[in-house]
Structure formats: structure tokens, C-alpha cells
Image (spheres, rainbow, N blue to C red):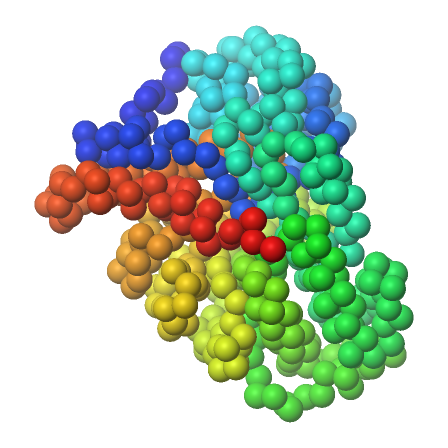
Length: 469
């Protein structure tokens, strides 16, 4: 059966079609947050088959296959790549109404020209066809990025990373431009006991600082921020259940740090206080450097302990959490803003119940110095689908200015995920188009077209300003 994805996919009105085709479709992509491995861009990897490019590491697909009753042998196990693809193809027709159904067929069409719906009947032929195309220069990692007009992208990199692959990419003049993002989560994971102490040794080696005190830790972090900046890094990212805020002096960060070094267990509030103090220090460093700080909040991770012990983290056992967000988020942002040290900030929320909380909170700290200085980030993880994107944009529209939004990102580990930008742009254009049809917005193509172009590309280009020294 031929795919349902045509030129006007998701565009329900003539005005929506005009907005998409004339103002969004041809724009380049700035993917400012993803988890692509930079070594595969540096090495310009050629995938042996579509399973390696499409299924490996994709916990979205893994969750669906498990739900459909597919044995783990065919998901993360020792089955052949072809066997894994055939099992995925068997699952796909039954993913209807899950965003995977849209993403699957959009990606097959955009990268490989596959016009049919994937299923058991055509799986072998599509496997062979796509795997052959992946051997062509147009389908190595750099070729795949260039196909989708990716202008620049930001990987997510541990604070101790040498960034050697980023150096190589820059030296080779590879297009798109690839920038590192500072991800320091492990540097303040003090609750992890011995694992944390061992990580401090790695951080000390990377920064050439012997970390024996809390001040040593802060010096090492600033050293690494400076290093990332020298290599083109202009963003930081943090994955947290929630932000934390305490009155200064509630505990003593140096004493808590020594306690951890001595192998003693910290209580929950001590852990949270320590994290808050480190994050405030980091925030001030980011402001000094002119960076953008990102906070991904609201995930409850590693829920299935049995399968976590068998398969490890990031294998599909995370979900939406229901943490209290507003009070501490307000205190944290206010602490930095109070001394005019609040960097440009993006807050990504995983619990849709908190959409209006986050959308209204970010507006408190937009001070007129930068357009959209504090952003309510795009629909993330479980929310980066049509319903989630629409709810995020509706909340942002109701509480703030959609026109200042920096738009979409992939948050992906797959080089085949970039049609998610197209997916987002179509949903954006349809949302605005429906308002025009309903008489809620004027039929002003020039104004609304500019807003669509800004959200799709120009706002991000100006906000991140990767060319800034």
C-alpha cells in the first residue's frame, strides 16, 4: 500500500499549506540539542544496513517492540541485523496513532524514497534496498545530514570529554558545523557515593586539578567550561528530575563534599542542596561566557530495575515523573537574576501537567535585554509528537510569545531523525492555519509567514549566535 504521507501531510487548510511550502519547507536546520556521536561524523561512518542506522540505540522503537510482544533477542539481543529489522517491520503496522508510525514512514520516504507502508510483506525488499543505498556517499553520516539541510548541530558531551572529534570535524571543514554541549550531570551526582568519587578523579585529570575540596571542584568545572568554549561550545545542558533551591547557608557545601569523599551517605536534602549550589555556580559561569543553559526536567529514569540490571540505562525504561517544579524553579532563576547573572535559559518539561507552570514561569525572567531570553523548550521525549507539540505551543502562546520561540530539535541518537524538524514545521503551520480558518487570526500571509520562518530557523540562528567569539 502506498504511503499516506504526501506533500500536504498534516496540513488541513490552504493557508497552512501556503505557510509550510512558502515559509518553512526549504529552510536549513539548526539542531541545537541531540545525542549524535561526534566520532561518527568525524569518521563519516558508512552503515552496513538500515538496522545499524535506524534501530540501534533507538529506545522508542524498543519500547514499542516489547509492548507488541517481541522477544528481547530481536531488540537488544544477538539476533542478526536483518532479523531485528524484520521484527520491527512486523511491529510497525500496529504502531498506528503512536508517533513512531508517522516518523517511520516519513524517514523512509525522505532518506530512501520508499513510498510504501512498511510491513511484513515488503520488509525484506525494503531492507535490501535501503541497506544498498546506505553504501552510497549520499548516505554516509555527513551525507545524511546534508540531505536534510542541517546547517549546524550541537552534540551532548560529558564535562571530561577531550572533544578531539569536534576538533577533527572543524579541521576537516566538514559541513554541517558541529558544536559541543557541556553536560556536567556526573560532576554533581554526589548521591552516587563511590562512583561519584571515582568520577572526580577523571574530572581532575581532564582539568589538571587535584580535586580535594569543594573549591577544587568548582575550579575544575570552570576550567572545563573554558575548554569547551575554546572548542566552540556555547551551550550547556542538564538532565534533572527538578531544580533545587535552598536559602544560602542551609548546609555547607564544603562539609557535604568532604562527607562524600569520606564515603559517608548524605540525606536527600543534603544531596539537593549540594546540587543547587553547584548549579548556581555553573549558571554564573555560563552567564560570564555568554552561553545558553538548558534544563531538561521531569523524567523518572530506570523504573524497571530487573531489566536495567540486564540491559543498562537508556534502554527504554524511563517515564514521565510528577515532581513539584514551580517553587524551586522560581527560587533558582531568581537567585541568578538577582545579581544579573542569569544566562539565556531553556526549560524543557516532560510532564504536560506542568506546561502552564513552565510557560508562565519563564515569562517572569524575560527582562527585555534579549528576545526570548528565557524559553519554554519544545515538546521533549514523550511529548515530541503532534499532541505534545500542540499543547506546548498552545501553552506558550497563551502565557507568552510564540513568535519568539526557538523551535524544534531532534534530541536523538539517530542520523535518520532529522525529518522531525519537518514534522514540527508542518504541525506549527497547521496550528496557525487553523486559527486563520477559524477567524481567530488575520489572513496576513506576510506577518504569519515571517513568524513561521522565525520559529523554524531564524530565532534559533539569532539566539544561539554560534559565530559569537
